[in-house]
Length: 386
Image (cartoon, rainbow, N blue to C red; front, side):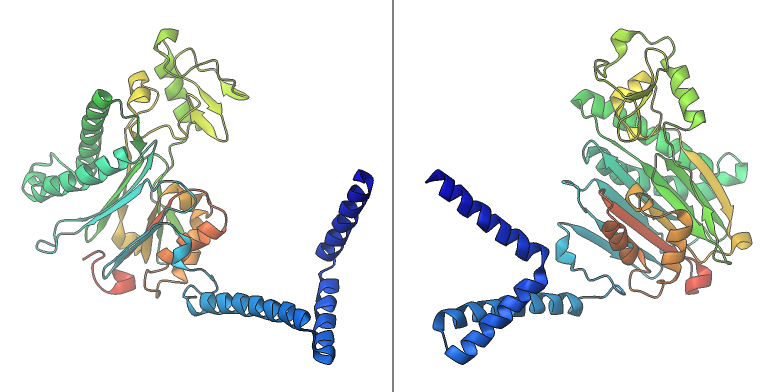
């Protein structure tokens, strides 16, 4: 009896594999059933055929619905696919942000412009949190506003040559990190965030970066100009700094359990090291070498908040637009490819920001993705962001 049952199951399995591997045979079977129903009017067969037709109509209806909602030049996608989306738009700035495949949304962005006094630079910021949302929330709530307050008094103080946009950026970023680390240490909140901030005036663009969010500019000839450089643990400069920070630290101070086996590891003394765990990570944990927050790694001095700051002459570059984005975009696009992609879509409602975010998602990016596109005078005829 058991043998007969096994034989029957085996036969059914072979039949299933046959139809799955040869869909054309299943199609011919459906045609045969339809003809049988037509000539012999078998109610059971007609029921099967009707069910099949209903299923086909349902699929066609879903495809038609997706085509009706296709607003992205070939990307058949509905916004409902994403658990959370954010958008922002004014005359010269557009932002599109999705949670994507992550369980939580840890990206944040901010745009601050002074419509009363246009001599003050506009502020654009991207924060990509990790280990929770607390650090990105804190940076968004405190850094742009403190920058705006400092910049409002800058016109009076710059006559003495004591301040510049670069110095103000550095001071404010370091101050926010100090406050964050002090507050988070007391509450044992281990979250951290990247920080990418751009100050845009009539003739000058100043960009500060901490971490691996990235900015890129499209100049008058369509070339990609890097506005920032990622802070990654594998970079020689960062490796040497982590090694120096680790020298003299006792093993008792290492909060990361060293019993964890790392297949690839640079042993940078007892206190500081980088290891490969899907990507190169400080202490086997953090995939960037600089950040805001991350107080346990700050206590070891292996992660620092110091920004790299670059200044650009807009009269010389005559740029069309710039892109500021979290690393979700840069996992799927190079600088040059992103500039080409957005340049072809500047006439879209979100200046190409939405299209490139969704394209990054469809290329398999597993991260949150936030993209900000800022158009300059040459592209819009007015001052960017105002």
